[in-house]
Image (cartoon, rainbow, N blue to C red; front, side, top):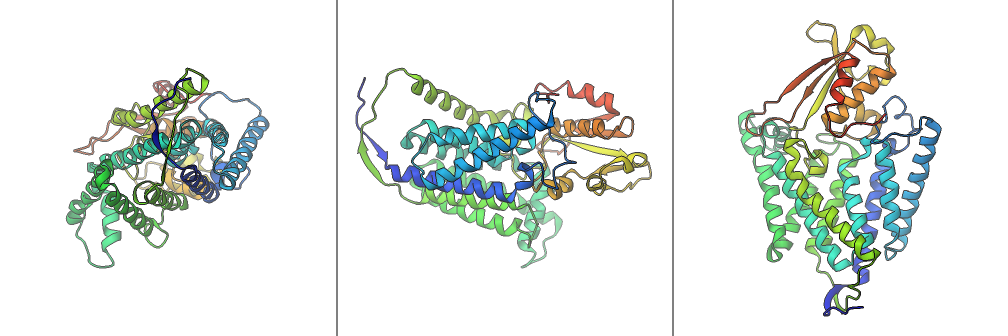
Length: 416
């Protein structure tokens, strides 16, 4: 057994405190997005479950898996809030949350992905090292989020809407000026990421990050743009995280890190480091569609790939009422109405729809199978938009057979 040189380690109280805060925050997020996790809730039945792997054909078995995993997740989070020092409980959180996400891709919300990363770090690494990884992940969120917004689509749509909502109580902003001012939003976020990189400016960056999240809560709340409660709660959690990691001074003690010997624990630690390092670098491939948009922290970024689903009016009566109510009326007289994904998802599951063409096409295919839609469904599949022009590659698909053939083109396919 080798003894390393003494090094500064944060007290166990700091680690336990951070663990409690994160567990409590995730508990709140689960509560405000509960239609996404409780399949028996009125919002769930007509919204298809899109899984990652092949599942048992019996819906009963899948329901048992879901409720068992959800129970374990809630109990584990409660145990951490009660006693944040028990690091092994984070493995229960990771496994239970992972099972729920495997059963339904829609649950792969950005905060759920972040929790999977945090759970692995909290479960495997000492606090001194784990804290450095948390700092790196937080910086990457701001960096990649800003990079995703330095984009034609953002400044001409979501960004302009944010500027208008922010400034309209004070002054009327012309559309052209709103587009120009919208560039300040990602630039500000990028500046925060840069400030957080350097220890000397980290506290200033943390204060700015808190101010940004508070502003977003005000901007995105029901009194303004009306985004979901999950979005507001996650911004609140990230603001709290910024205070803990960047503003508040940690307490330190001298300690000795023991055990360099190869062991299962050592292999586990290196595996976690590799996974987190991959999560930090993989978003660089997002624009090439190798890594998903949300796992690349492309937040409020309308450049994402997507699928526009249209249903012919002859098949509308065969759809469940909540879904039928989300079909936008035919405007050009060709008989095709567009399914408003975002409205349907927010109304029935309480969260934004997963912003990925692969997922949305799979959703269209499942709707076609469930509702016996053949030639009465068509999809316009859109790729990632060009950063400078906003243009996209588009593919038109008509009928269930074409949807199935296109689904085979994705390297990560939904499993039947």
